[in-house]
Image (cartoon, rainbow, N blue to C red; front, top):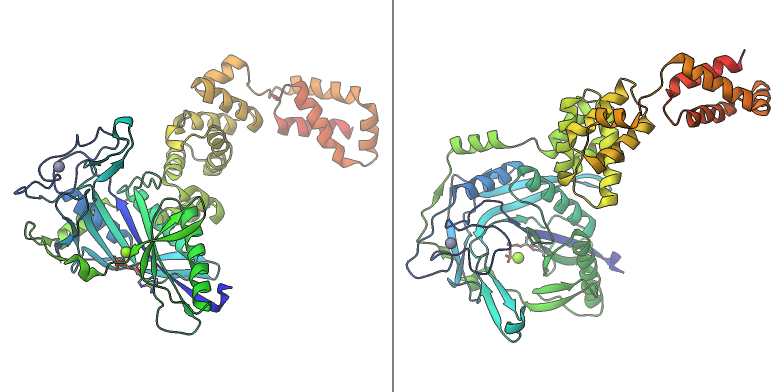
Length: 481
Ligand code: ADP
Ligand code: MG
Ligand code: ZN
């Protein structure tokens, strides 16, 4: 149905920064402490208290700007965004308005029709509000409480141009942005806990029309899947509305993950409703080129560059590189492995194969993996020097996962060392040939495929410990005698 319309999407993303302290005071940003234990006169908004800008927040904003191809403003201004809400004790939020720290950036995304550039309008710094608790405890059944621990927590707001034309493009952009802020280490990337929150602005217009339609803003949706669902629902809703002769109104809508629908929350404020004005408590922020250069020096290797290095320097297939780079923690683990072991192909196979399988099975993040890169490489080295076969290696790996012992200890204790003694293998080969005269005759009659059967039998007899290459060779030799 919505084939009659072109979809237009612009995204506002709030990224909660990982700084230890808040943006305008020294209070801790640690999560989960008892209500209001991390507050002071500044973040409580007491009269006369003055904000002092956290330098680390500015550096994180500069890093995010550099990584998204933005221009960093030599001078930017903090502004007051005025509105009343019980979790906002000052009656205004300190944000940036006319002169944000970063502007004119872009990110490249992959679409079905190839690469596409998505513009980033601006990135600005701001403080978060507190949190209201509604009847969350028994004694507070009919009351609301304000917890101001989160008040004054530093955020970056990253605003895109209305450049996306489908829910899939929006998700591709979000995932890319998410990957970058996590790689930079400026955000922990946890969507569920609200460290990375997205408002999606969605409108439609008849094909060929230049002017944008009226947008609805979908608020704070906390998973990529829900964002896609919410956008798709909203597009359908608007299309049906317009086709029935109705008009989309500018409003803020909430997504209900139970029903998969969006519903109206409130009419959308315009910027002038907030009476923005420069905050007289904070001097203009001046960022000189030295500071920007220093921040450039602090940038880690970003996903794009890492992918290229894996492909070009390690000769890795692009598909493998994509898998390894997707999550920073996986890429870091892999990098730690190749630093200890030259055979990067085997490292890649194990990280994307056996290790990922086990992590999935046990539902454990790679950062908490009991098998460290050092331990894993211990196994890979023993495959490399033919002490164990790839198959036995999996057994060693499982044992290592349980016990935390290193590869050599496990191989010793369990007697898993590969048999490479020609005499011993020859004996097993002879036994298998003697025990299967029928198959031997068939093989000699031209049924080459049976070699697999013989290898299997010998391997079984050796409990997996015979060197498969040697078994193969000896069998072929003996069977052609
Ligand atoms: P506000 O805070 O009022 O939502 P912002 O300028 O911060 O305003 O964000 C507006 C967002 O909406 C941007 O991401 C922009 O790309 C997007 N946008 C603006 N107009 C449209 C439209 N007609 N359709 C879809 N998205 C739009
Ligand atoms: Mg908005
Ligand atoms: Zn404080």
